[in-house]
Length: 227
Ligand code: DX5
Ligand code: ZN
Image: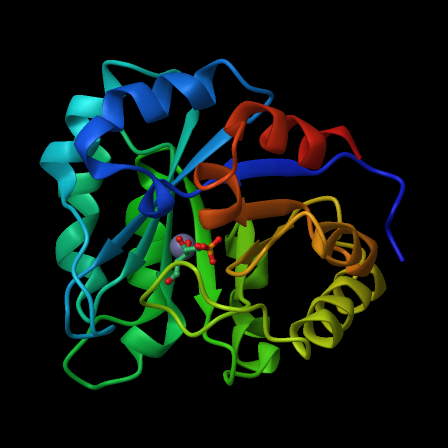
C-alpha cells in the first residue's frame, strides 16, 4: 500500500461551466491543483463530443497548470500534433483505440509524444485488463485507470476499480518501477472516496463534477490535495 505520499488533483474541465471557462481555469490556478485534465471526445470512441485543440490553445494563455489531455477518440494518432501545438504537457490515449489494424500501434504514438518532450499516458476502460499494458510500461509516464465508462462526467465510481489500482500498484512495486510511473484514476472521484483511491495506490485524482459542482471548488480541490 502506498498511502504515505502526495497525490495530485487534476480538476476535469468537462465538469466546468462551458460558458465561463476562463473563470473556471483561473479558479484552478488559484487552488492547490497541479494538473488540469482536458477530456477530448470524438463521438466515435465514446458517445459524446467535448472540445478540440483550439479551445485548449486559448486556455493555455490563462494557465500554467500541467495540461493533461485525455484522448477518448478512435484515431488518437491524428490528434497528437494538434494538441501538442495547442500546448499540452501530457497526452494519454486509450489502448483500446489502437487495437484495430487500421490504427497505428501504441509504440508509434508513444514515440511521437515523447519525442516532443511531453509526458505520455496509456488509458484503460474499466473492463480492459491491466495486463495488456505491461509491454509498454518502460516507455510511459502514467497509466489512466478509468473508474467510469468513458464519455460522460457525473457517473458513479465503479467499486472494482480499487482492486485494479491495487493490482497495478503492486505490480509496479514488484517490478521496481513504481517511482517511474504514476497511476491516474479518472471518473466518479468524490470527497467520500478519494482517500480509498489514494490508499490503493492512486497518484493523480481526476475530479470533474465533485470540484465544479461544489459550493466552493477551490476548497474542494485543496481538501483532496491535502492528503
Ligand atoms: C469521463 C472523463 C472524466 C470525467 C470525470 O469520460 O474521462 O475525466 O470528466 O468527471 P467526474 O469526476 O464527474 O466523474
Ligand atoms: Zn478523463
